[in-house]
Each structure stands twice: as structure tokens, then as C-alpha cells.
Amino acid sequence: MDTQEQFEQIMKECRELFAKKLHDYGAAWRIMRPSSVTDQIFIKANRIRSLETKGVSLVGEGIRPEFIGIVNYSIVGLIQLDLGYAAEEDLTAEKALEQYDRQAARALALMLKKNHDYDEAWRGMRVSSYTDLILMKLYRTKQIEDLAGNTLVSEGVDANYMDMMNYAVFGLIKLTFGD
Image (cartoon, rainbow, N blue to C red; front, top):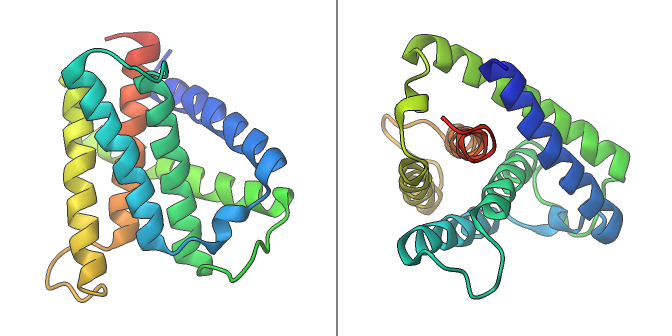
């Protein structure tokens, strides 16, 4: 399997869980402001780092579900940036999945461009490095949010969500398929 096929397989798994949660909860996440989405991703990345450091989970869930959560919340964040947050749930499951697919396609296109330019350097990295990079991107995102987007030279929140999503997918690829 090449990188694109692995990426697509991981995204299919993430989408399936997203669709199941849409069934159970609807699009309740539509009320979340982007900063709250950022904090949700922070919780997941911080838990991954804690599990990597401690080597044991008392809750019984491992690193893999948290990376999936980062992928899905990153997509939620991108949707919220595009549509704005809502006062109430305002998307059908069908519309939410259309939005999901659009953002996943954008992430794939970006990954393919970067993968070409960086010559798959991510394959030589450790999974723990993806965790640290995601956490760094989260701190950057929080700073951009605190500045209300008024940056001097930095990419926006959307670029950081895309990068976090792609790092999480790389982690899932390595956890699923190995090196």
C-alpha cells in the first residue's frame, strides 16, 4: 500500500466513527466555537502524551482512539471555521458528512503536496514526535485565537487544524501498518 492508500484507509475508519457518532448525537458539535474545538484536541493530544510517557492507561483506552479523535475534531474545527458556529444543531447527518468529506479531501490534497516536497520524511519519525508536533500546533493555534487572528506572518487556525489532522493520520498509519 502506498501513502495515499494508507491515508484513505485511515480516513475511512475515522469517517465511519464520525458517522456513528452523528447517528447517536447528531451534529451537536455545531454549537462549539473554534476555540472550544481547539481545547478538545488539546485534551486528546495531552492524553496521548501522558499515555506515551506513563506507558499505561487506567481508563483502558489507548492512543489510537485519541488520534482518531484528533482527526475528527480537526475536521469539526475546519467545518466550524467555514460555516461559523451555530446556536443549535443545524446540520443533518447527510450535510455534516458532505462537509466532512470536503475537509478530508482538502487534507489529502495538502498531505500529497507536502509528502512530495518532504519526500515522506514523516516515515522516519517516531509516533511520539507527531504527538509533540500536534501539541506545538495547539499552542500556536491558541495564541492565534488569543490574538483574534491578527498575526504578522503566521498561517491561520485552519492551516494548523490541517497539520494536526495530518500528523494524527501519520500516527495512525504507523500504529496500523508499522514503519
